[in-house]
Length: 208
Image (cartoon, rainbow, N blue to C red; front, side, top):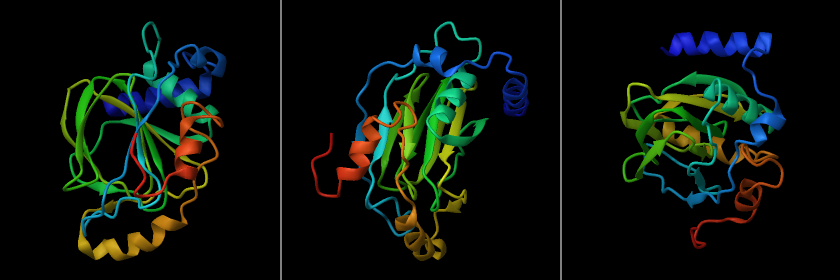
């Protein structure tokens, strides 16, 4: 299924078929405030000491869309988050120390643990968006057979994938602070909540 979706997405981007414009996508965005969570490092997964993980619940309405994944791809690209892919979520703990990541649930549902061991398991469903600051551990604990996720990254980052193991921890801790905050929220753009939360939040402040 995922191979088909990847090919389908590439063809849509090249031909423009079923590819929604930024104006069309805007009509599907629903006003939402994100839930912000800081995760502690645990010796295997560093997480991010500066930027909180963000979760938008049901922020994109996909009713009546020709291709739900294309809606997310167009939305993320409009806001400067590129390198989009269509797939599921790995069932092992991993994280990206040199880039932030956004995940949009285009179809189905999944229960995903963020933050590694001692983190938090969150149920995600169609229309949800989560933003993972560099270093945030994530692992699918359970997923529906029809799960389809769209992921993307800020242009300023560099993709890399680390597993949850002590050998990589020290190196990752040196990389993570060097990853700059993006200029735009992947859903709401330059004036979105991410810009405020990732510039003003520090550990120890009250979580929303």
